Structures are given as structure tokens and as C-alpha cells.
Image 1 (cartoon, rainbow, N blue to C red):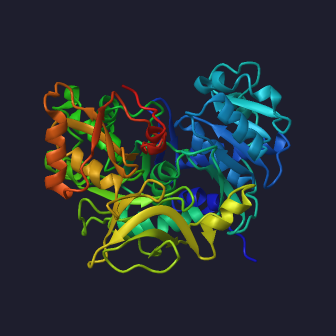
Image 2: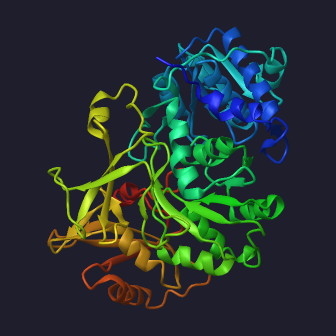
Image 3: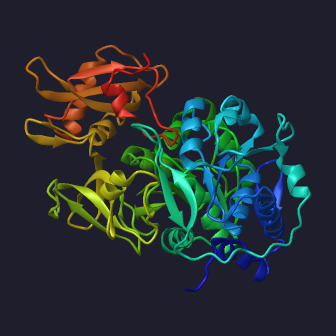
Length: 513
């Protein structure tokens, strides 16, 4: 069997092809060229060897988006060790679960995030060492000091294309996260398909991603895709507020901006940023996490003159597999299958459904994970031979475009007809008073399900006769049976760290009034 290590293709190839002095990453404080990243990743590999971490063992990463992240992530893969980047917004209990579940031998943690896990790390039998990225080691090891002790010479471990390279934990919106195991070849698979054939990414691109590196979406945006062509990435360690993103767009003038529907809407509606621009070189934006409402895409294009490519991806499939493309955009849809991916829509009994009918989306993907760690039943349900079940409900039109209808567990019927929460939400936010909306089923006095809406209003909006106005607005937009029978005005909607609305929490009454 021939050998293949993802770092050889992602990083070493760039140096071999003469891009050693090219800027790879900047985090507003530090910079890394491709040559420096190669040397530092070798030091990280030597550090892991000194700490006694063996091939295929796991190391956890609770790290902000700084230049330290690619050093550790790529250094581990170079050593044949499996890095496990973790969501930086989890609670101590969630970290305790994931660190125990992954049996991580070493934890790399950013200084600012250490306080969350300080009471956890001493109670995990498999965790032998903590390495802190920053200036305060909290009694542990400092990453910069440890790297400085190591040689920048390291013989990259001869791994195989189908060998586990890294894990990503799913967002866990309805329970504890699940560890998705990805192999070495999966990174290149996403670059050869979406990045190359949809984005058309080039060496002179400068990338800015609001989604963080620990997300599958952010990892592709800010690491895999730019490194696949020797481009440059701007990393942001802070929360992506409208003001901050506009500041970064102005300062670094990127060519590609990767966002999410919630952020695009917030940037469009932020009063303090109403005169901000998106830079002079921006050529394309992308959106994932949830479907992009048509009104948001059109408003963004009208204001900034740049299209947003809406698509859908997942942790299980590593990046976007269904997307609009620069030459083929229809706002309100997720577009068509990314070249290299095949999709099917199936009914509850597994039969393919015709155009115009709602079905669950199944994907045949070159980047599919090989399963969940320690979750055999869930692995069998999700990863079914060549096909991966997404849990997303879609409808395909006669032109072959796919439109999102909702998660399988969010859909419900009204008068015997399927209602998509997303469709009702998209109609609601086209009303000038509504900033955000979420729709869930609620039983009426007869026990029949009807739509109930939770809305976040724009600043200064009037609430007089709001219910009647929104009801009629939805009726006119999408049909008389889909309007919300109840509307609650709330301060915010519960969301995952990826920006997905947690409708199950609304069904359980967890809304902020």
C-alpha cells in the first residue's frame, strides 16, 4: 500500500514548489510563512514524540484561531498522531466528557480558555500533559518554550491515505457531541472538489473565515483550501461581531469571505456599521451552517456587489457538498451537487422521491468520515455503505436545484401537508420589523399541530398590530395554511456555536424574552 500523509500535500508541497517565503497565516499579532510553518510543525511533531504520544493516539486542542493552531494541528498529523480540535465554547462538563471519550493523551489549550478546564484536567486518567499556548502556563508547559527546545528536522510518518488523521466532534445540538473520524485523504478531497471546482481558489487569494478552525466548515475555509493552492489566511481569535468583521475586511482586504446566515444578516442590519464597506478586492462570499434566506443574499449583493454562495455541509462529510456556484446562483436554494459528490432524496421507506416532493438528503462523498467513535449504532444509521444520511429534508426542482426544508426532526404537517420551519422563517424575516425568526410546531386546543413563531425584532420596530401584520405577510408569501398561529417576541434565539437555531429548545420552552 502506498503511503500518504496529508501534511506532505498540504504544507511541504508548497515549500517544495517555492512558496516557503509566502505568508500562510496571520492572526493580527503574529505571522507564519509556509517555510516557518513547516519548521514549527516539525518541532511540534518532535514535541509529541518527546511527550511519549504514539502513532494513532489522540491529542486534544482547545485553541483559539491563532497561528498556534495550524502548528499543533499539522504537527500532530505529521507525527501520525490524531489531533482533535474542540469547540472553544463548550462548558467544563462537556470538555470533561469529550476529553474522556477521546482518551486524549495531551491537551493543547489557549491561555484564555484554560480557566474553563482547570478543574477538569486533573481528573482524567488518560490525560498525561497539558500544554498552554500563551504566556501563563498555569503550572503546566508553555507551547512556545517547548517548541523552542525541539529540532526543526523530522521525518514525516509514512501514514496511509485511509488512516485516521484527525477527529472533529459534531456540534451536539441535541445531546453530547459525537467524534467523527476523518482520514488523511479527506482534506484533499474537499479541496479538489469544492475549493477548486466551485470557489476556484487561487494562490493570490486572501481568505477570511468567520467560522472557526475547530468547525469542519472553518477548517476547510481557513486551512485546507488556502493551503491547497498556497494562498494566505487571516485568522481571527475573537467573536465575529459585525464591527470586528468589517474592521478585518477593511484592514486585510480579503478576496474570499466565509460567513454564515446569522452573521450576514447581522452585518447588514448593524446600525453602527451601515456605512461600512466590504473591501475593494472581495470577489466572493460563502455561507453554510444553515440555509441562507433569499432576502439576505439579495440584500448583501445589492449593498456590496458581491454574491454569497450558499451551500450545505456537515461535520460527517467535512465540508460543503451541495452549493450554488459563481456562474449558477439562485438565492433561496442550496444549488446543485458539488462536482465529485452524488446526492439522493429518499422517503421514510428509503425510496427515491420525484422532483417537487420532500425527501431526506443522502450523499455519496469522497470526504465522508469513517464513522463515529464509540457510537456503533449511530454510525450504522448515518454511514450506510457509500451513502451518508444527513438528516436534512430537501426538495429538488425540475432544474436540478435543491431547496432546504428543515431538519428531519423539525418538519411537521399542517392539514396533512408538510410544513418547513425554514420556509416560514424565511417569509417572516422579509417583513421590515423582523430581524430573526424560528418556527416550531405547537398543538392547538384540538391537539392539531400548527406553526408557532419566535421572532427577534429590529431596533425601533413598532409592535402595534404586529401579529396580524405578520400573519398576513406570511399568507401572501407562502400560502394561507402556513402562517404562524402564535407569535412570541423574544430578545434572542437559542443557537449552536455554528449559528444553527436550536429549535428543540424552543419546543421545550427555552426562549429569552
